[in-house]
Image (cartoon, rainbow, N blue to C red; front, side, top):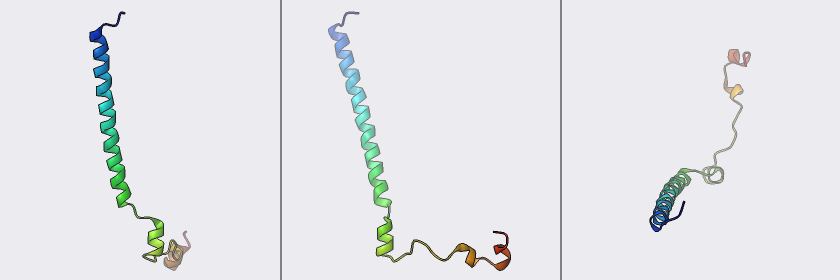
Length: 71
């Protein structure tokens, strides 16, 4: 099939439209990732700043005696 100028122009416009869509959705994903990172709290911050321990007393120790026999 011979490539006419109109066909080459069509291919160029189609490719440009595809690139715009890809860039648009990449920007949306980057914005979502940025928002997600702002909501995250690091373990280092919790451990050092708030003094929350990573582990506490065993859950089994806090159960009534009857329930301990079933676990």
